[in-house]
Image (cartoon, rainbow, N blue to C red):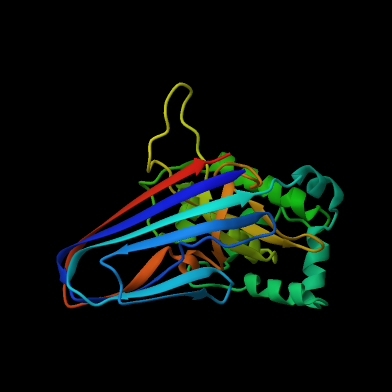
Length: 294
């Protein structure tokens, strides 16, 4: 599959901003089944400084600085991807590593990959392990259960027990509240799953990107109607990181496009920065369009 993603971020300020510094996680990254073909970044007003690089997790980043007065900032990113499908059935049938085996291996990690995976067992800025989260997941991840089977069951558990409702949470909503109210958005469900997994000793990381969505039959897809998406992945010996999407109850394959991954949303925020002298009230508008090329 080939896709074109256009992600436009617009900030409108109540008062002119004289200076701003920004870092963005909007550029695609290559993965085991995803390849970036080309990318284009347009910023208005034009920055006096821009530089691309990689962060601690290997995500593509770009930094830019604008040093002229402006009441509007527009970042327009266009990326083309090629994604190769994975035979997920073989993964599910042939991998018999149990939850207990993984936990035992993590106590004495013998490979660099296993040692790096332990980093995703720890608390992060937006995800804290807790007894409440552990209690919600513990029975699913029993020692004798195959790891991928358990993760699929847990993905389905969140999908069936939680309601997608953007009005019930914000980026600051605690996981315990999400668990109690049984509602939220894809970011909440990914954070909740990761918090539960880490609480039962399973390394888990936050995945950020896009998901191809199709219009109802007979209707054309609206430009800009898509949105950023979030899911999670767990570390499976012999396979590496395997992804799960609790919002849609699937294992991501050729319709999920990865932009970045980290410990939680704070590591992969699409755009963050500081402004000086001005700003006042500000409005944010985001438009995302995911188009299948072939």
